[in-house]
Image 1 (cartoon, rainbow, N blue to C red):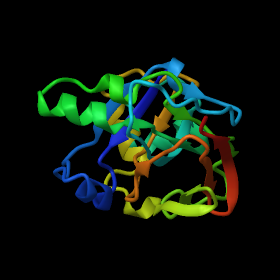
Image 2: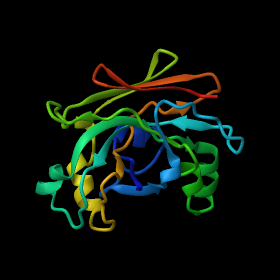
Image 3: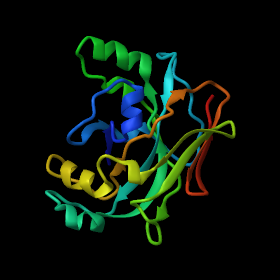
Image 4: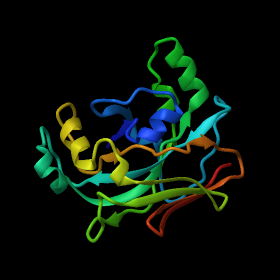
Length: 202
């Protein structure tokens, strides 16, 4: 099982980090050890003093596929949820400044909390509201209509390079509003008004 994650997929988030707007999906990977399930607490690691929350709609791949055409991409997932792409921003910026890969800033243990999955049936995936609350205050909110690359775009593109396997997770990008987390914070993630994620930072 792997996580395929997409960077810079919402224009406003791209602007807030002073990044350029991509012309194709920006892909990075997280290992299975990044997954944090069942609303378990996230223990703030000692190696970073500036870990940011990035809320994202995620989809679970339901069958194996390679070189998937966009028109068939919808057949490769049945469930969606909301998750967090935790990013050690201080480490990432230092590595980027030196032209080095920043995998350790994104792929560290438990850096991908994943909410409960729900069926995609009845959901308009092209116009889906989602949000993150920190201590009951809305910090990020987005709508999938603002994606630069749709879920099906991403699946078609990623499957040119990686065989997608059942159980793989696709993180589809974060909207604007990313920010620092603190020990004691409670993070709750929603698709529409369905709370799918609820955990504490310790």
